[in-house]
Image (spheres, rainbow over the protein chains, first blue to last red):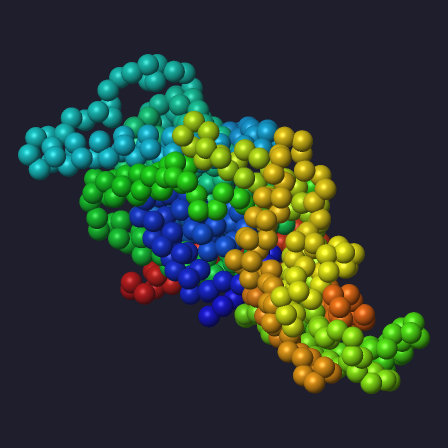
Length: 305
Length: 253
């Protein structure tokens, strides 16, 4: 069943779009990542123009994150207070990120910058996560009690402006979450994604939040970041395709519910191994695109006014 | 009425001493892009009108073209820099049609002279205007070739050397495939009659390609009220997210 997209001006298979939305929705519910890092390349692949893919992808992430966060709210696995602090940092960071993005666009190397950012960050995070989860899994199998790393005292605990984050069981300064939010915001704006795949590991490893609340909190924050992005794209480039968004959303919200339910059944550590493998796979794909000779050396782009 | 106007136009042109004229029609001159638009076929047909006998000089040939709205486009080329493939060179093509198809009765090089092609811009390469290649790009030709190659693979440029059927040196027809990734705008159909590699008569008519229904509505809203459109997009996302969550909760009970 073909459907013509009014803004993208291409005709694509509706079932395929529904499937892509569903797949990304499952990941979103399962891992708390918005799925932007996956949906945008998949849309490129089926022939949607990049600007439309980025803007519409963000809109779909809003829907699947809302769907996912509601399920998490009911299970009380969202640290709203932490989410708001991260969001404040995130919006500031994304402002800076948009400035950097425009600067690189003027230099004509934004594509390369985005691809390199993907390779470096996905690679780094994937390896770290895989290492950590495998170590924990091995420890669980051999029966040795895992060392509780979360409450060790570091310089982070000496920072001022302490705040109680009850849902996370933390009493820390607001500075680290603000910095994490801002750095993720910068990267998210440059890479054109919600930033969940960077946010989730940062919350676990840097802030020491329990895995249980990380996903819900990350989704909570992503809703606002991607919502803001969608609106800005619609306002400045008119590149949000509602027809495309609707199909992706239909798939996505269903997928997010399935993902959240699946997540409640799976073991947290196994979940982390899966996410690590996924992140590394996307990283490898992008790296190969940079390293292997493309079959078509030339590409077409609309002239930017 | 349209036929009358056409006939009148041809009648006026005919006074310029042409012995052979074109009378033509199309299966449709309006293409509506609806939500389930899957591309369209268009049949261009016509006849050669003569007051005299069929001339003996040269064989009659027909070329029919369909052209979509034009615009500038950037063609970029990758090369290997420090082990990775990067866009290093680019050429801005000043004007290239979004769609262009040529159907002729024989290979263009046999029936159309170079000067005539230059003057009337009939073949695909002639249709692309590129004057402003930057100084550091020496092989600007490779970029326009790449543009043609990429658009051909997308079904947007086509050249069929025996796409036009000519019967008894009088009746002709050609079918064009308009792909699903069609851009909105006014398309032009041109018919050329040739003898001895020179164009002896020509005629053109328009095809209107428009989005209709929900497609039209969404497109217009996005362009004229982007803020409302943006809010609508977020509203739909929020409602869909909430509805799915509620639906699943009810299913679990």
